Image (cartoon, rainbow, N blue to C red; front, side, top):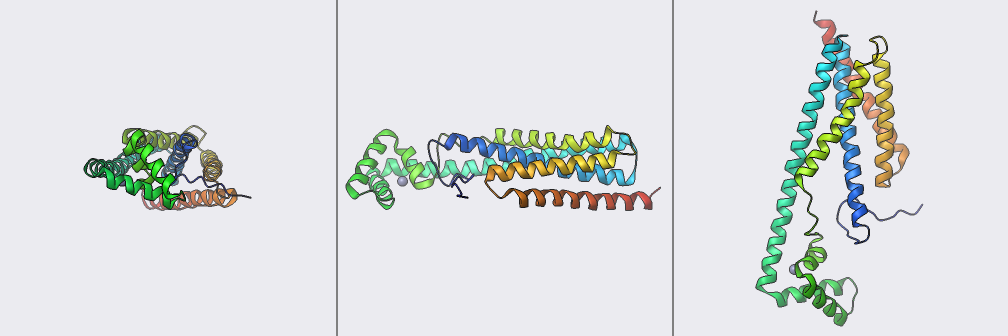
Length: 242
Ligand SMILES: [Zn+2]
């Protein structure tokens, strides 16, 4: 099967696909966030279920885990996107200053880059001239730096999206453990979590154009292992206490 070159990172830019590429990135991030919410909250509530059958304790633990996880995801995402954005802005500032200081050298540099891409010297020079007249910073940002000055990621949006997707994922094990009767809650939670993890693995493999089966297996086995470990820890603690 031919593999299309559509990497989710922004190392390559194709104007017509930029929009759908960005949307794909958001979808993948949302699926990853939900996956995180499912695994960590499932581990938490199943660990608590190993120690106690109190629905109230399960609800409290699950809600606390949902909130703590969402906030921590949001904070982490905010910091990492802000840092990246600052670095990109600083790079663009340097470029802007160079363009103001020495436009001739910058024009020659741009022409050189187009020539390196395969254009003849004369055509590369003309392209560089016309793009410089149109939007010098945009042309340098795209060709030289691989950046789009109009499309820097907003850290607040990224933080909000991670928090929401984590919370949506976390709701699944939380509801699955508190809603059913105590006798079946573990089976229902484990089953629902494994199904949801299979769906997440399938979706992110499809978005990333990776082979589906290993992605699904990895995701399901990872979640199963997490639940087994926390259940064991909870059961040990539950039996050693009163
Ligand atoms: Zn430049």
